[in-house]
Length: 285
Image 1 (cartoon, rainbow, N blue to C red):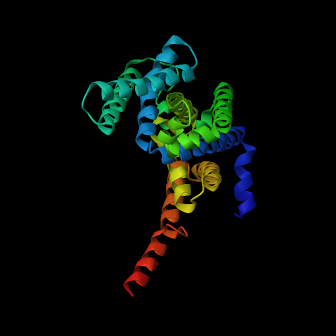
Image 2: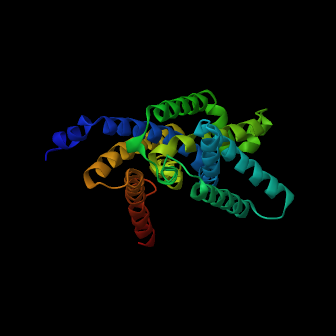
Image 3: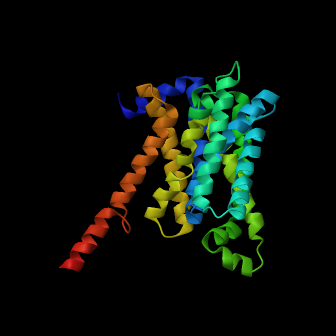
C-alpha cells in the first residue's frame, strides 16, 4: 500500500473524517496551552484538573446539562480546594494536589459505577473520538475558540506571569486574575480533550507537546509553533494508526507524542543527549 492510498482510504468513512479533524483541533489547542503549563511548572496541576472533572461530567449527565459545565465547575473547584488546603495546613502543594485530584477522581469513579446510563460513561475515561456526536463537535469547537482567543488576547501578560510573576505584579498586572484565567483555560481544555483521549490521557496532551518543544527551542514563539505542529501531527497520524491497527485512538495519539518527545530528548540540537555527550567528551579531552 503506497502512502497516498494509506492516507486516503480512511477518509471514505465520515466518522474517520470527523475523528481526524477533531483530534487535530484538540491537539492544536492542548499544545498551545501546554507551552504555558511547562513554563509555569504546572504539569501536576494539569493532571489534577483533568482528573478532577470526572465527577462533574457524571453529575452534569444526571442533571441533563452540558457536560462541559459540570467539568468546568469541578475543574475550577478542585483548584480552589487545593488553594484552601494549602493555605490552611502545613502540607506542601504537591502533596495537596495529589490528595485533591485522587479524591475527586475516586468520587467520579464511584458515580460512574453507580449511574445507570444509556451512554457508556467509560468513554469519559478513555475517549471516544471515533463515535463523537455533532453536538460534542460543536462543544469542542466552541471551547477551542474560547481558549485560543483568550491565549491570543492575553498572550504577553500570561507569558510574563509564567516567566516571572513577581515582576508581573510589580508592573501592575493582576496576577490573581491571570492565575484563574490560566486555570479556567486548563479546565476547559481538559473538557475538549475528553472526547479525544479521555480523562486519563488528556494530561499527556497538555504536557508532552510543550515539553518536546521546550527541548527544541529557547524562544517562546518557536516553542509554541513546534508544540502545535507536534500536537497536530501526533493527533492526526495517531488517529490513522489506530484505524489500521484497530487500537485505542487516544492511546495511539499519546504514544506517538511520547515517541516525538523521546526523539527530541535524544537528538535536540542544543539540549539533546547526543549533544551533551559530545560536549562532555570534549570537556574531558
